[in-house]
Length: 467
Image 1 (cartoon, helix red, strand yellow):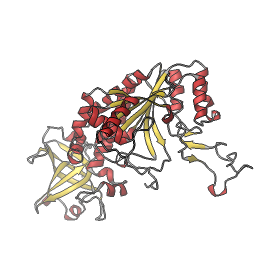
Image 2 (image 1 turned 90 degrees about the vertical axis):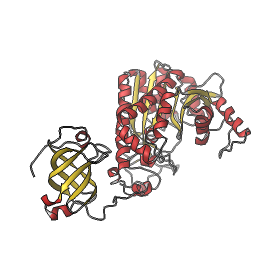
Image 3 (image 1 turned 90 degrees about the horizontal axis):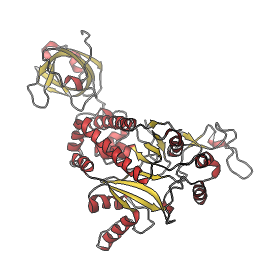
């Protein structure tokens, strides 16, 4: 077969130079036709759309044609033609076909609908489906949008460690990193594990957040963001939790809580606008197949200012709803950590717009959040979205050395683990603020998928580390 340079299908579908000789490569989605002519739908992953290959069977070897089955990989030379069928503007009239990789009949993605649960069992193949091709192209675009947003605003991308000796959230749900034989752990005289012989000479874990290191960077570079994998050893089998996920965490020197809220709103709107501008084919497919309100919901967030609401006011609204007969699974009272159902009520039913909830009780928030003068609340903020609940969590950070040290002690965070963090409050402290956005939560919102396992290529959840 004559060697012609390949054209990606996404580019081919935009061409109008009919009669040109072209080459496309990709995987067979479907093959249909008569005894004279076959139509092959070919996809190379560059777009949700297939290109139709028209094959005059008389011109091709019968044995080679038998190898063209669903899933097979082909290289096709042919002439670009205006399509006579509906659905696509161009097609390729095949003059040469090479089977790069045959596909036997055990291929699990035959032409029929597959459940998302089944596709998780074949996660190594699911990117070849329309659904996951769309999701993973959107995932790429959201990563690009995030970097672009911060770069355009003078932020610096700062790489924080994956292996750490500090527990940022104080929750203790961390995966340990060790080279030791777990069946032969050395103990000291108190029965505690002795890490002297371990790789780092102390207990080390996978990070739950890059925030503490990000704050250090903000105290020198001014405006930074992190974007990397984080890990939670939380036994949560829910559609919203993963053991390994990606986080975006900006930290900005001299920002206070109001600046932080505005940054979060601008950031998330930018990402959604980027998706609508750059991923419309994929979003439209997901809208039509999974979530008929997806495009409407994305536009809804863009066209509404986010309501700023103190936690205390939010609790009052929820208590009134309960008094008026609204049933919630979890109780509502001042001091409660609001559940997703409460957050969604505020967003979807009460305000009908995204909500930024602020000034939470200090008991339910981390040690590093700036304390308000009432002694009861901290300058925390959660951005609440329709269908998701909390999508961003952040705060103004406590810059006062005495207050921070006291609060860490109250919450059982050992000073020996965070001495370096406390140092920034001794050496030229400054007001600063930041937030964390779970990348997969953003993707849930932008794709309309309902399970977080379906927006990351290889989900890590309790009892599941396959592929």
